[in-house]
Length: 123
Image 1: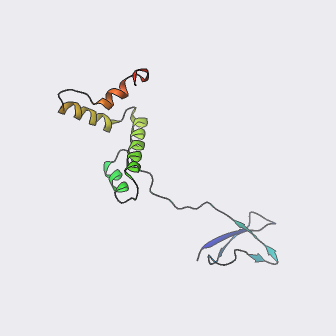
Image 2: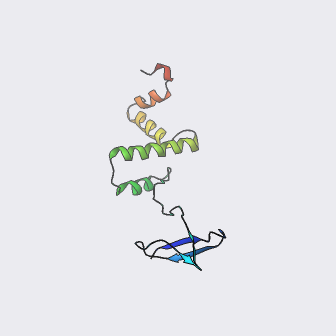
Image 3: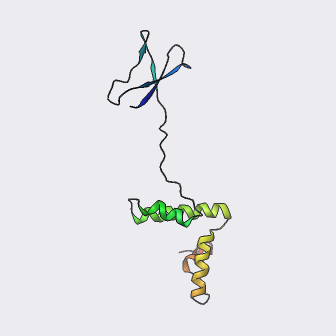
């Protein structure tokens, strides 16, 4: 049974816990005085926080989630932004760019070139 809180209207610091069914009328009376129900924010949590520095954490948190590919790309972008905020640049993205250049004899990735180019030159 859920636990509900009620406060004495004459002394709001006096709070009592009452077990009541979910379908019961949520009222509490004591000595003819109807006490006020106290509403609290729910303390449930959803595992939406992903450690941006852990590849395994990203895979575990996104593996069994229902959603679209866009949701995974959004989570990846948020992790990249968090790493950039922490380090100044995203080391994972930079490693990808360096590996790309190494495989292609020094040719840089177009996305990297666009990111480094001043905004006024981008079409």
